[in-house]
Length: 70
Image (cartoon, rainbow, N blue to C red; front, side, top):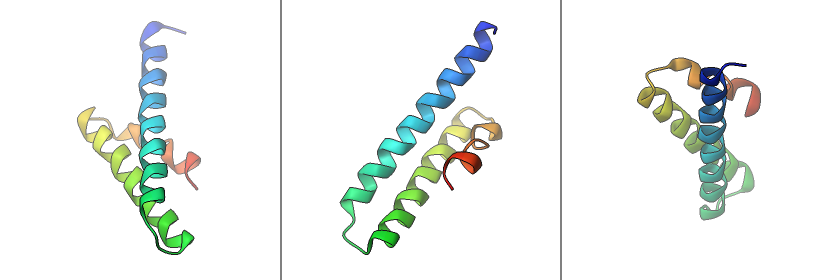
């Protein structure tokens, strides 16, 4: 595997780890019913991934989210 591809996988992994951590943190902040907390945490994690897709100017950053999050 070439270095560029490895770097791309590393960046995507970091973005999703960050989104997961922020989502978990957000989940613990809310005191609603657990399904509402889960929904809000998922929305926040989605926004984090979307922001990174804008930063990298690459909509493909968001693509793995469809297979990871559901």
